Length: 189
Image 1 (cartoon, rainbow, N blue to C red):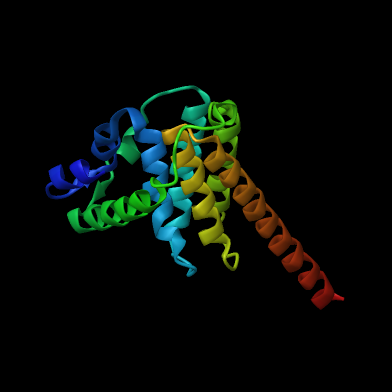
Image 2: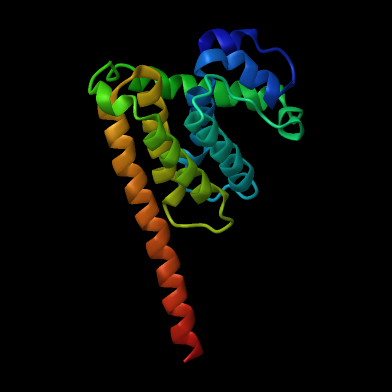
């Protein structure tokens, strides 16, 4: 991550960034995408595109692709140098802290790419839905980061933690929707 950050000059495109991430592109890109959502505030307009990219990453992981291929209209999307620098710096800090705990273990769970892909797609759907669930974004971001780092480090314990957090995130989203539904029905009656 540090090497990537040092070699990035000027504005770049999402396609260039994905290509430079290389073999670990899917895991690293999902971590980079999830990082801004650690803040418990709504990020207007960012959730849907990030969610769609995460869904694409999850689907490509399910297809066992080692690098992330983006559609041209997404790959050509320009990112400002300052935005990329900030996202990479924050991601590097998070990874430095988490990598102290990450190590290959519970390999049977770390290699369940279908399960990981499904969880990433479900989390991507949660990001893409255009309504704010209180604390939904940070919980989804934590789940995404744990799953992605577990994938990168082949750490089944992190994968398990990410799956448990993803279940919590899905529950929070469904419970909030149910609350809105029942509140709306009560107001109409």
